[in-house]
Image 1 (cartoon, helix red, strand yellow):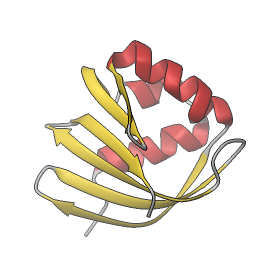
Image 2: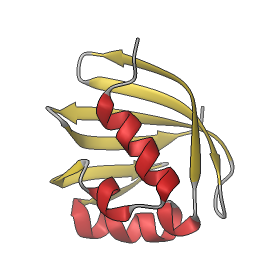
Image 3: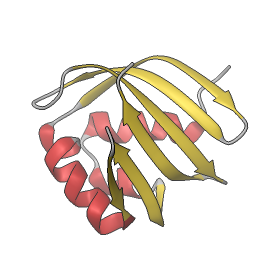
Image 4: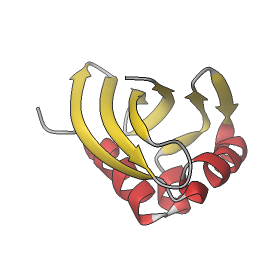
Length: 106
């Protein structure tokens, strides 16, 4: 199954270090749940990304993905100056935007 456009755009934005493109994938009330810690809204998601994702020069190499309705799960190898290793990114979509992104161990 092809990877949904928004997920490919997410990987591209992170790998390009493009915070604005990354944030454009989320609506204003979206949630990032990073291993149990929740960040709600663009301001908090940006602060989290500045510290943990794009600001840490993260890279993502997607190794698999699957979709069931509005739920998409991506397994990626994470590199950069922060966490390195496999992570699962699970997305709940609301139309073309990410409503919630959950990051967990594989």
